[in-house]
Length: 604
Image (tube, rainbow, N blue to C red; front, side):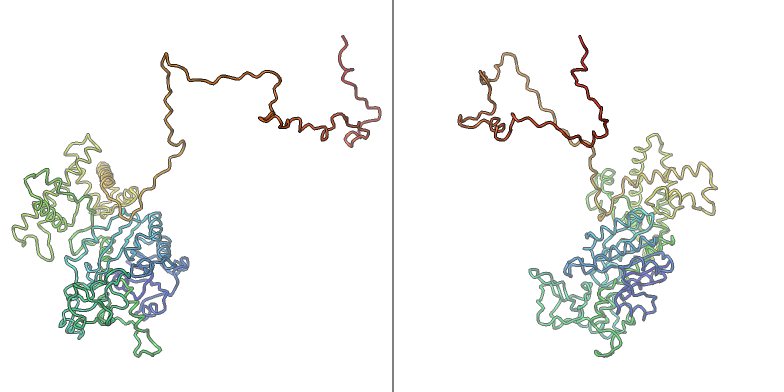
């Protein structure tokens, strides 16, 4: 599986992708220092401004399987000025390059505030228009092998998938508990780690907030994660630091993180060469300020490794080493409490929570696969393992609780799906519903557990699939029809129970064409018999000659008389007869005679 990295920076995301088993093809970076570090690390990198979308696409010699990148976040981050500049438009350029290359997968990373920007909404609409299914989730680095509190928004896309197809897998990839600074320390190899262990606390520059906001905690214990790494995390605060009431110690007793420790917290190996200057005024190499900036802007490599591992397993249909599952299925509904209250009303609220937690644990053990019946699911549970410990070696009390919880959950799923099938196809019997459930699990395994955005593509994948060396087209007509019908019913069930993404735009309200809302006609007032008519004013009858232009005042002149004043219109002067012939009448002969109309009248 080959990948291309956009906005590569110092190469943190690329390190995580390579650690997950992917192969690097090309990196793009515009800054000179970051590009030099990539080339020095042996990467095939191009220094190019990604505003030139066409040149960037032509620079890729082959189409990659995955395109990854984190566009600049300074315009969206709360630590910045929050002013939209040309850097924010790089989110749009990232989406354009992905859609032009038609890569099967992509990974987009940015700060959580970017998910609410107009630029991301524009990019998201472009992804959907080109057929990508999106899994949008905000993850914290401390849950993914990084000793740092660093929340980031990830958008993982794949062609022809349904939205949210990888949501549960990404959540399952998290660690049971957050990683702390103590988990990272290696005092035998690094002397600064030994000093940090002796002091027990360290200084991490907190979020200072705005002018009217209090400072955050600056002195933390080694048994908790570090704050978000910034370019000045390793600097001593000086006397201007205001102590917080929850600080783990005094500033004078706290350890100041070294540059090497900050890079390791970000996931860079200790021997990673950033081309530091040997001396402050040396010509070759890069200054500490430049290196600290590229380290702070990098994506933590261990976090990317876990996300890429989930993608790699889904792409190749490899069984996961954590949950022993062949493929991931989305959880359609987590509400089990209502079913338990109906079946077992004597239980308390804490019992419901315990059963639901055991059911989730059991589903992780069996990989959340669509087994045909409860017996097959229980058989898979007996052969499963958790953290290297076989199920049969667990305490008997835990085994019994997991078996009961899984049985209740299977009843709940069966009742939920059966109720849907009865509403959809009321003529089916219970045996027919059982066969449909069995065929659903069989068909889903044949298409590697994928849920395509376009159902026609999903049926095409089923028709091109192979089961135990037998092609779908070679199966019996009845079996093919049953598998297609079962997949159709399952698709309708998903569309009814699937919840849309939080970041998906709300459906637009379609305008109502034609006539608008008509007003109700007024009620006619029907007079009852015997009611008196409305009073009317008496009419005035005019006598004598009528002068319409007469005003209220008698001395006002008559308008018609003023208009036809003989000084302006000489009515007594008649026009002189025409003596000259016009050009239109010049063609007539000299003896041409025009008779008088009176002569043409017939005689009596």
